Image 1 (cartoon, rainbow, N blue to C red):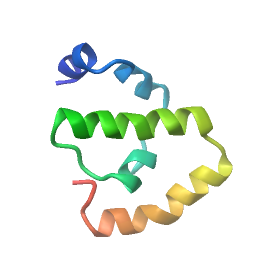
Image 2 (image 1 turned 90 degrees about the vertical axis):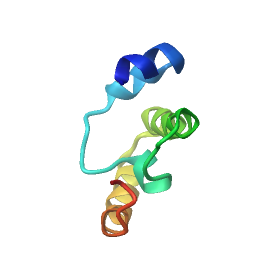
Image 3 (image 1 turned 120 degrees about the vertical axis):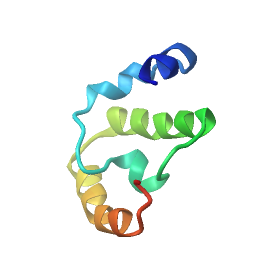
Image 4 (image 1 turned 30 degrees about the vertical axis):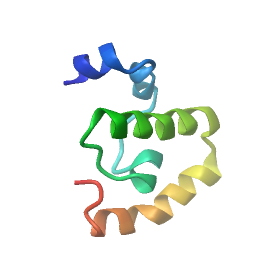
Length: 75
């Protein structure tokens, strides 16, 4: 599946610059992606995080993570 996204979505591999965690900027803002269009939207959030990552943004994600997990938006 990753190979499919890499061949159809520019900059998809750039999201691998960030180590995975419980959740991220894309997950707390968008939730689960089931289409290629939604995957592109989530990639935009990931690229925003890569460009603007800082302690405040990480703290904000940390605050929003419990709500994301409890609402099952991450699936």
